[in-house]
Image (cartoon, rainbow, N blue to C red; front, top):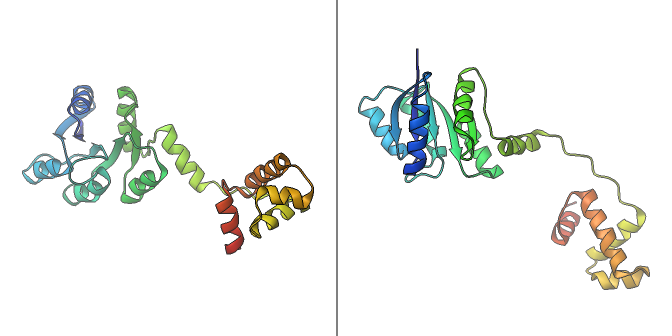
Length: 206
């Protein structure tokens, strides 16, 4: 029995490529090809067959692909939604997963890999492009313990917290400006921060 597939993509060239390839595969029966979430919902409300899989873009006119997950499931409760997008940022990734997306692919994914990702969903998988999977892994990875600061590094941090410039820190401690900067880079690495503002904020909230 073929798998009922719906495609939601607003860019005509990409929509046509997905439609031409995926709908020619023997595993799939394309029941809807839409340019927006609203267009798909209208088709379903008008009696189009309910899809088992939905491949949807995120950046769409009207409701986004993320917003569309819940809307689609109101009319097609069994549908599994895989998002395909140019966006690879962590914030959008987690919004999509929290909304119920079962997969998250980037648009540079080759068509055969998109097909396999869709089939993997029905085997219990949660396909993700490598860059997306790294966001998820970082989120669940335990934070590395912070290395302790040496007495000299602690002196420099305290001087910065007192409002001294790098040059005044160097003068106070009798070391060169480049040495101060080298210590600061080491402190940033140990504390897992990237700026003086973060360092001073850490001190205020400690």
